[in-house]
Amino acid sequence: VVAGRRDVRRFDPDRTLPEATLRQILTLAILAPSGYNLQPWRFLIVRSNKNLQKLRRCAFGQPQLADAAVAIIVLAYQNPHLTHLDALIAMRRAEVGMTDSDTGEFRARASRTLDKLADRRTWALRWTLLATGTLLLAAQSMGVSSLLVDNFDEEATRAGFGIPDDHSIGGFVALGFAIEEDPFAGRFGLDEVCYEEHFGQPWAPGEP
Amino acid sequence: VVAGRRDVRRFDPDRTLPEATLRQILTLAILAPSGYNLQPWRFLIVRSNKNLQKLRRCAFGQPQLADAAVAIIVLAYQNPHLTHLDALIAMRRAEVGMTDSDTGEFRARASRTLDKLADRRTWALRWTLLATGTLLLAAQSMGVSSLLVDNFDEEATRAGFGIPDDHSIGGFVALGFAIEEDPFAGRFGLDEVCYEEHFGQPWAPGEP
View 1 (cartoon, each protein chain N blue to C red):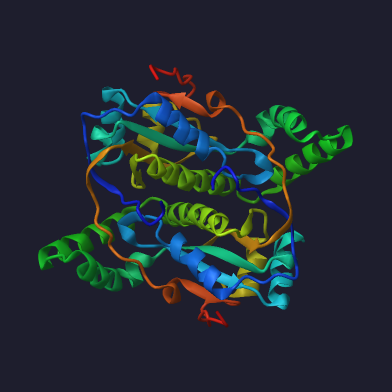
View 2 (cartoon, helix red, strand yellow):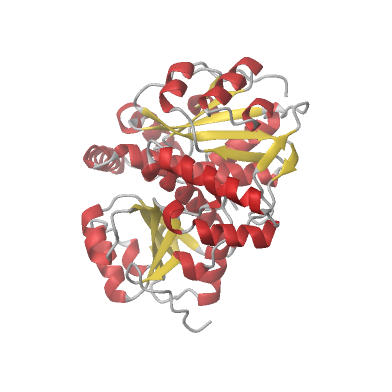
């Protein structure tokens, strides 16, 4: 699945994505892990023609967005510890069977850690992009092609889709069926992108 | 693979990770896509006892880091367009067979886009965390357990491992073989984390 995935160059504008397939892709995506299981990802699903065109304008005209069956604005919510801790703990009690004292300790630890984070925006983006990686592979495993759009006007997107300040925009995922995909463009060798024990020190392969 | 993965609570301290397995995991991780294929991820592999202990201290004592077979400091490099564009284009010519004029256009477009990005740190983190998602699933598919550590002292990590300012720290991945894994703690329903067409508007499932 990993090796077979390519970015989409051109979507088939006439094919729609069955609702059940979209649900399955998202159901897999949210199985990704997250800190304290706080699940900071939010997915804003865009598929009306009008809004796909609007989203395309937010992405400086990126053509694939207009022909995608569905686009998802991936959002990273920075304050789940303020709003979702009760629901999370109720779910955790049901799934794991926590005791009252475990519950109290979990609540205190999660709140304290999130409150003390130097950069909660990055924290939320971290887990959200991790889930987005899962989403792209889940789509691929179901025969659905994708593209992650990384260049967009943040302010225009916020204004156009009503996104509040405590949600960062991780990117736009376009989903659909490809007429044309990008060719494999190669990858740098592991020696180029890996270090060992200290930054700048080459990875010295040990015994296999 | 997605549904079967759990965070590690306790690693087997006596089992090492074969070098070939680590290579295969990283080889799959770097097949992740990236903007202009600039591959901003860097992986700093830590496995000496001394450095695993140091990394554990950087992560406020997170116990799994000491017993992991390997830990990877995941880095997001913000300036690949300044240093890697020539190598990238050479690779692209070999893989895809670009013409001279395609090459010139690609170079100009990639440089311009990266130069103009409002937030290149987020850009680099986006693709790096996406690849980290692939890495965790690649490990899982090979029977290797993992944990992504999201709470660490950034300055101590930079100082301790010589990480320069143009590389952001995406997180620490601990890899190894689990003695104990976290139980599944549940997930919010899709209705809780999905919106449709506009932020706050519930996802109204269409025809299946």
